[in-house]
Image 1 (cartoon, rainbow, N blue to C red):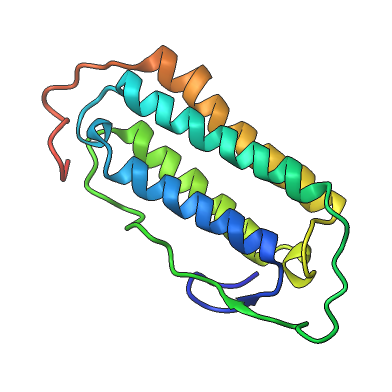
Image 2 (image 1 turned 135 degrees about the horizontal axis):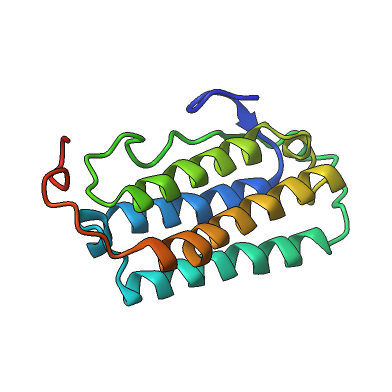
Length: 160
């Protein structure tokens, strides 16, 4: 498994998924909800759209034939650094949990056996990826929707 910022990926589909995940991580970090103990409806809608984007791309890319690219294989893409600080001073711990979960997903994408293919996924990796997407979805629907908003006036200052 590559360390963050190290290694390279051959699989175009894994690279694209990492870019989608990175974009979602940045969106969560910069969202209005990151600074308060409540996930706004607008931010929930955005996160739901990212989850749908993950699922749609996994569905599309997993159904494509394996490409035969003898002239370009191995065309390597560097494993990108994590786009956000993993210990951000966020008031919203649910947002921080989402970022940590998405970071684990991106590491799995870069370190899986499928990362050495031209495109597509091995069956065990696809199961793992779908589980990661489901986990993020469940964080939103089974945790955030039910546990927030919260009122923690003494501990809801960045740095606590």
